[in-house]
Image (tube, rainbow, N blue to C red; front, top):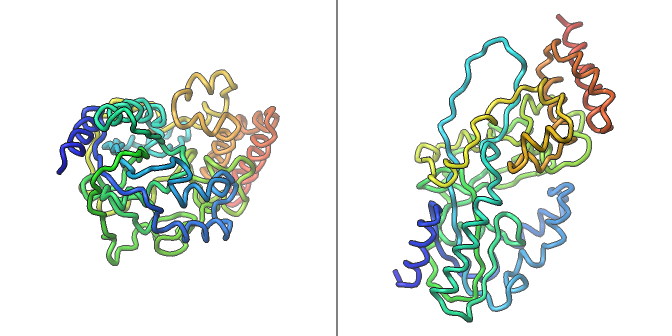
Length: 349
């Protein structure tokens, strides 16, 4: 290993990243498949993905003269304790990554420091750009090329060292750094993730229709959740981990020190009735600085109403009736739907 690479990798580990590897900045191999995915409309309302498609296909359009992509990863794995059923208020589930401080801020602060170190190590003429899930980069492709992991059948990255509970970030740089060996796919005949998806959003191995994905429906979608998909969401109110949780490579998962320190134990199971009573100020107070803030109050309460309708707990009828008069029509609409579901279930019983 070159001294340059070793110095950068050691600095990345000092900053808390669990993995740091290097890839060439030539166009990603899967760019044509990505463009086909966009043409099929499988990105749904995430228009920014199509708007920046040319840049995602060619790093030179992002940073002229880019020679290397520094790929880093941080594990957010945690051993979750499942609370026993107590007959208390109905609760909602939040995806594991969102049970932490916002990773954009956590990783971004350290990635900025790593970028500055790269300039110091490689020379003052070095130009670099860093991104934490915000830039026009096909980050999973580069992470696989760098050997961080391989893209699984669920389309997420899987590390042989850390499983698939990974947060990715990257630095495009004009510095020429010896690339690492790429990773090859190691899914074999396993298809657990396809079977686990509640909405069959993984339409085939390595193919995802975001429009069906619960993470898309509860986070990225800004309007009404399609009625036919609402019952499949269950009590998930922000994201979904089902395809990740069943991956057998998670037997190697381990906690990363960086995200372990950012863990929010209060975000594991959330009281749905309490959430339904949040006003704008209370929402910001409880979820500010976490990924959940991305959904905004109206999006989270839309999800809460959907979950309450699926749980069909009659104790939620009065709070849902109040939500039918919410200042946000989106919340009111889903509250009406939830009441209909609960009343229908009561009639069956």
